[in-house]
Amino acid sequence: MSINITMPALSPTMEEGKLSRWHVKEGDSVSSGDVIAEIETDKATMEVEAVDEGKIGKIVVPEGTDNVKVNAVIAVLLTEGETASKAAPAATPVPAAKAPSPQPSPPKGEGAPVAPSVASGSAVISAKPPITSPFGGEVGAKAPGEGASAAPTKSNGARVFASPLARRLAKEANIDVSAIAGSGPHGRVVKADVDAAKSGKVPLKTAPAAAAAAGGAMPLGMTKAQVMALYEAGSYDVVPNDGMRKVVAARLTEAKQTIPHFYLTLDCNIGELMAARETINTAAPKDKDGKPTYKLSVNDFVIKAWALALQKVPLANATWAVDSILYHKRSDVAVAVAIPGGLFTPVVKAAEGKSLRQISEEVKDFAGRARSRKLAPHEYQGGSSAVSNLGMYGITNFAAVINPPHGTILAVGVGEERVYADKGQVKVGQFMTVTLSCDHRSVDGALGAELLAAFKVLIETPVMMLA
Image (tube, rainbow, N blue to C red; front, top):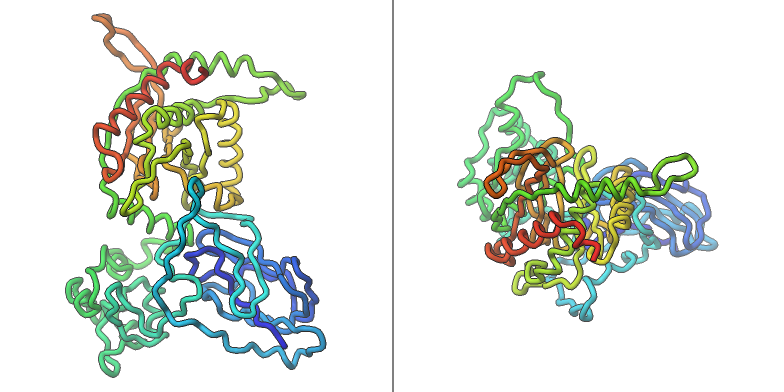
């Protein structure tokens, strides 16, 4: 009996992906463990391998195809004795949506359970660890195995009736289909309605009316058509957002809308830090080419000091978890790494127990692999706090957006000479401004101030980090 190979859910939140490459062709024999394809989501590109043996009878989805739904048949595997005439894909059953069953809590001290290998129905593929990974966390996706609905619903269950073609065209134009007045039977939105909305011939419903028609919340922001209508045609280039940019936009929008941020700022005298850094770097042994085997950055000191500060103020090493607060035993510090089109936040785990040199080497490795999108999910997920340093760009100070589910993020500005008063004398010293963003649900004002004060002591007296 032939076996359907279906689009795997590479993460618990994946809804669709791109079949970027086939490693096999029709007629090829495969064995368990053979890599047969590469699947790309807005979170990662992953190799897919066979977990059964047979012959590729038919490739249903060509490589390069975007928006392939989870559980859609992408190829057919022939078992022993079958011929290509048997390679027609069978219908892939889509289970009815149902409320998720409660999951058992992980054992104490362990993180969230890892999603198992995906094998939907009779599919014979499993996902290997990612070979490339954009910024983590797909958002707004249905649970694995949940089928696409012919009539999309809002959060309260009210339906928006539209033809499949109309919904696809509206999505491509970034128009909320609930804002389009339908001319089809029973108010159904059809292709002509979307075309009229895109051209501006028929105005979109007002936000309150659209929300009322859909039975949902008022849509946020302007639609693509509304934005483009403000500018002269030909005066701009349109570059579609890739998966990474969509995730970054969605997650940070969610963060600012759902996390009650507050900000604390202070200046740190980093004169002793700069002197210690120079001494350590000067003492670094040379390799065979005469180059230092390591070179510590200011950011390495910042990460170490922040990790130790979280240990000194453990109540601030916290994550909001809806009906609970998680107080973390380790200082797992995420480090913002900018790449073209977005950013990663790889996590230096248990940073409080690592040397400055270990932190330096780990961050450099993360940064290099982030730029080539070769970080694995476990390397950029989790953490309780983060550090974002824009000092290398000359930025004096800024307030960073908390990356959920972190409870805090430390924004670090440039180190620069400033005039200051010390016991009635005017002096010049090296200063750095830092701003702490806190989630007020888990870290209150006084607690955030205590955490920042602990960091200031450590960063101004770097010898304390070596104790």
